[in-house]
Each structure stands twice: as C-alpha cells, then as structure tokens.
Image 1 (cartoon, rainbow, N blue to C red):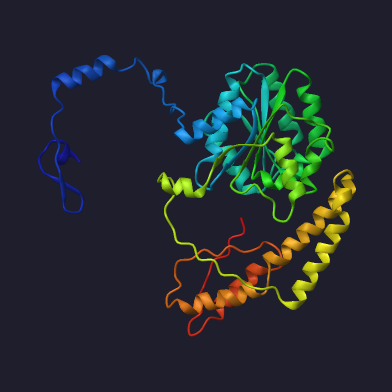
Image 2: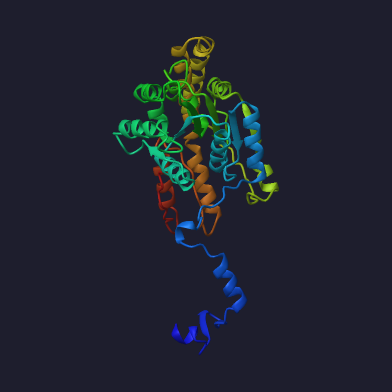
Length: 361
C-alpha cells in the first residue's frame, strides 16, 4: 500500500489492469474542504425514495379512487415499492393512520418488515411470535403520543382474521387513528378463514384499502373474487406481463403449454365437487354458512386439478427429452405430496439421477 500510495509502483488489483496513484489537484482539494460539513452528523445518508412512471401512475389512480383499490401488476414490477409509495402519498393528506400489511407467508412478512424499515417505518412483525399483543399496544401508544412518526404492523392472514387482533386494533386506535389495510397476494383474502378479517364478519373496519396481486382471479371461485373486488372498490391499475416485457422491465421468454387429462377417479371426484358447489351456489349469495360450504368445495375441486396425477407423467417426458436438465425450477402444489412425487421422479431418472433442492418457503 505504501509503495502504491507513494506512486513507487503500479498495482494490479484486477488481472490485466494496472492502477497507479495520481495527485489530487489543489483546486479540487480546496473545494472539497469548503463544501465539507463540520461533522459527520451533518451528512445526510438517506436515499431519496423514487418510483418508475408505471408505479407513480398506479398511485395516482389509487388516490383518484379515494385511497381504495387493487394493483394487479405482474410479478417483478415492484408491487411492494409501489405500496410503500402509496403509504407516502396518504401521508401527504395529513391523516393520522397506522398501516396493517397482511401477507400469506412468514418469508414475505420478513421481507416486508425489512423493506419498510429501510424507509424509516417503525414496524412490528407478528409472525414467529406468540406475544404480539404487547408490541402492537406499545407501537400504537407511541404513535398516538407523537413519539414516532409512523406505525406499521405486518401480520399473517391467520392473525388478521383473529378476533383478538381485531379487538386490539379497534380498542387501541379508537376514533383518532385511522387504519390502512394493505393485502399482499390479495387473492388469499377471499378464502373462507381470511374473510373473518373483514366486515361484516369482522369487528374492525379499515378506512383505506390497497390490494396487491399478479393474478386477482381466484381459481374456480367467482364469489371470493367478486368479494375482493367489491371490498377494495375494484382494480384501479393493471400492468400485465406482456406490457412489462415490452417496456423492458421483465425479460422475454418462451412459453409452452402442455395439457393433461384427469384420470377416471379424479374426474369422478371433480364432478362430485361440482355438484356440491351447484347445491350451495344460490344460498351462498346471502348465507355466510352456505358461502363457506361453496368455497370449500371449490377449493377441493381446484386441488384435484392442481395435483392431477398425469402432471407427473408429463414431467417424466419433459425430463427425458432433455439431455441435460441442469437449470430448472419446478413449482409444486403445497398439498397432496406433489413435491415429494416430483423429487422421486427426478431421482429415478435413467441413466443418471437428477438431484434437486426442496424449497418450501
């Protein structure tokens, strides 16, 4: 270092690239001295919050819809960042509110907390903790007493639907603090259990609402899909995968769809669930109990399609058609042990087994 600093020899840090030290001109040196702050505390290291034009456009549409709506944006186009931009937009209205972010998995919850804290949002994460009541009470107390500038709660759909959580929010916020609900992967909120987190089943209501999803439509569940649309006052902004690829935000790809049939046994089960759905459909419009029965039948029927046995047979063909099956991600249904079937199929591949890493979150 001393030889390099004193310009006694060149330095090769990157292969085939030579570096040497040069004197800093006196004028530049003096200018740096003049503009330098008196102490490190004066240096502002905060990054400015910026958004892409499509993200700003989404927020404008949401604001025009009185701070309610759904962003239906392709995966990879920055829904989380757009949602944080929405929080910042609502802050301009001088409203006193807390933000409740609901997510389907612990992993997403951790990511949300990290992202919110990166932009100086005080955040409580309820996942991986049985004692979330006290931290939430402390958070809201600090916010109502103006000891912190903002307050965010990141929770699961299970806790969101818990009456203890609802009563806690209602009691602690009172009439002075409004509530802003952000539902990530908002299609999950249409599930029977998650619906307990929203009126008329829930004891707590939200003053502002934002849903985030890449695919809003619930599989074989028009009732659940319509409920989500109605509660969040519709889709205010749509940005498709095709648009994102055209704009250069997402990479181009080739898509090959291979169709498979249900087995005889699966088809019988599918028909039986369809009959059950038909029996409950009319009553589900007015009877919450009937709606749950309809929903559960719809989920069971969707599960039959998702875990169809012939998908594994088709996977074997795909693997056999490729001499080298080195780089692949295979998405599996979380139920029906499909992921185990896939790994067994890969391990039994001839002439050489294909080893894979199972990721469940």
